[in-house]
Amino acid sequence: MTELVVIHVDMDAFYASVEQRDRPQYRNKPVVVGGDPKGRGVVSAASYEARKFGIHSAMPCSQAARLCPNIVFLPVNMEKYKKVSRQIHSIFREYTPIIEPVSIDEAFLEISDGNPIETAKNIKKDILLRTGLTSSVGVSYNKFIAKMASDMRKPDGFTVITPEKARDILPRMSIRKVWGVGEKTERDLNNIGIFTVKDLLEYDREFLLSNWGRRAHELIQLCRGIDYSPVQTEQETKSISEETTLESDTDDLGVLRNCLREFSLAIGRRMTKQALKCRTITLKIRYNDFKYITRSVTLPNPIDSSLLIYERSSEILKDRVPLLKPIRLIGLQVSNLVYPGEPVQISFI
Ligand SMILES: [Mg+2]
Image (cartoon, rainbow, N blue to C red; front, side, top):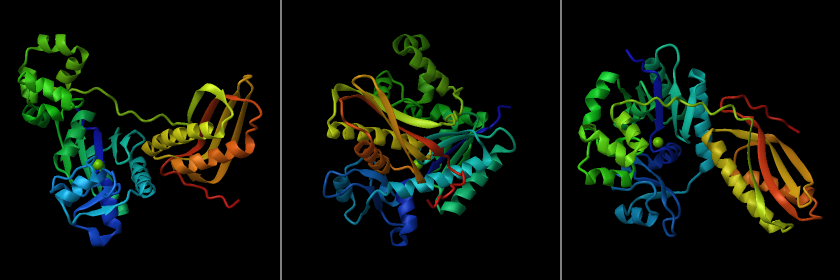
């Protein structure tokens, strides 16, 4: 028998659930976390009560307000969600080192020993106990099916799909549910009469392969429930960096700050995905005569926000980088990374 070793954990309406947890007056009420409903803000997350009105993420907040006039709008509090994400990751790490983060509230885990179904139950229980939040968990023999499993009974779901069960469920599934099938591919497949997994498997293989090539091959494999992609642990990252060679050499502080802003955003995103924090920020500068300098700061407490990374790196640029000649290349690196679940030593200096 194929082993059921892959777990997919997906938090339920993550941002909205965190806010409902912290503001009991909004529990069981339609809540949207997102931008300004009077401006051009969009929905980042909708509570399950809000979803009943047809509200979903990426929808303009103004439209959400029309669909449900009593809806409560709350601002995004990224720092808070990251903190919860780190808590969840530290729970994962108590059970397995093989973790592939998909986003701030979603991850694949591989369980190499013990009983994966029991482990998955315990992880779900621990998440609820320690964060007060529900998750939907799928257990199966590969990533594709595990994700399908977690998606089947949301919210607060727990679903195990054995290979036998997969053979039973898959054929009836809408082709849209298969990995990599977006709106456009769905339309293309519908146009040739493919609506379900069964339709695709019964279709002329040669035709599919000659029209879609490698993608058709992957699609057919997935439709047969086959997915060999491994649960990929992000390698123990030692540092994250971004750099750019400027379009023209410059000593304009504004231009250089803009680069740092972009770098900080990109680095912050990657840190969020892996639930990391950093202690050291390093600025790299290459002048137009190819002389190269680096300037670092190590902070007493680790940080993970793009804004703080930007502020610290701008200070270094302003105070410690002489602008005596034009700059050709600018780079930003964060290192001294702190992983979720690692004890953070607070320094008092
Ligand atoms: Mg989720």
